Image (cartoon, rainbow, N blue to C red; front, side):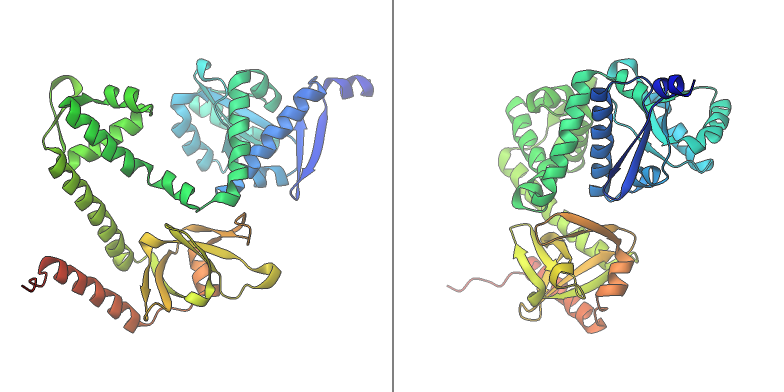
Length: 370
C-alpha cells in the first residue's frame, strides 16, 4: 500500500542557495520535475536580484507548495485579501495568456486560510505547481524561463552604460516619437504602438508626457495634433530634461525620507558615463561591498575630493561584489546609520548656495566682452 502511495504522490526535495525546495509532483516524469525545479530556481534568483524575499521565505518553510488560481482581473482583490489573512505568497508569471487566469504560489500550511479566502471571494481554485506548469503554454514557459536566466546573467553588467540606457529609454523614445509626430502632423496611440513596437500602456505614457509639455493636443477620435516645429520641440525637450533633473535635486533636499551622505573620492573604484561605483565604508578585502551611485543624483564638492549624494531611508539598496554581482540588499536607513557619517550642515549650505548661484548665472548671464 505504501508503495502505491509513493508512486501516486512524490515529494521531491532539492537544496539550492541555502534553502530546500520541496514539491509534490504527482505522477510527473523526471523531465517535468527538472523543468519545475529550474523554473522555481529561476524565480528565486529573479526575486533575489530584485531585492524581494517572498519566494525564499516560502522555500525556507520546507514542505509542499501549492497554487491558487483565479481570474486575472481579480489579482488586486486577491492580494488585498491575502494580506488581510497574513498569507505569504508570490505571484507566478502568466504562462497561459489564453485562459485569462492568474496564479499565486503559497505554502501548504496556508491552505485553511486560502479556503477562507475562497469562501469570502466566492471564486478561485487550489491546484499543484505541477498542474500550473502542465496547463501552461510550452513556448511561453520557455520564453519566460529564458528571460529569467538572462536576467541572472545580467547581474554582472548592472549599472554599465548599456544598463543605464534602458533607464533612459522612455526619455529617448519620447524625443523620437515627437519627431515622428511632426512628420505626420497628427498621430494616435495606435500609430506609436505600431511604428515603435512598444506596448499600448507605454505609448499612452509617452503621449501623455508630450501632451503635458505642450507638444501635442488631443483632437477627436484619439488623434493628437502637433503644436510646434522641430526647433521649438528640441528646445522644449531639453528644457524638460533639465527641469526633471532640477526637481529631482530639490526633492532630495526637501524630502524627509532622504538623508545626505558624503563619499570620499578614495572610495571610488569604477566609473562610467552614468554612475560611480564606490566601496561602502566599513567593508574591505574579501568582505568588501560596493554601491553604485547615479551621477544625476550626485554632485562633486570640496574641490573634487568628495561626492555628495542622498540615500532614501525606506529604499532597499543593492550591494555588489567586486565583479558587479548583487550579493545582498540593505535598507537605506541601515546603510546610513551603519556605514555613512551625517553630512555637516555647512555642506548642505554650500550645496544649496551652489544651486542658487548656478540658477542666478543662468538667468542673468554676464555680457560678452567686445
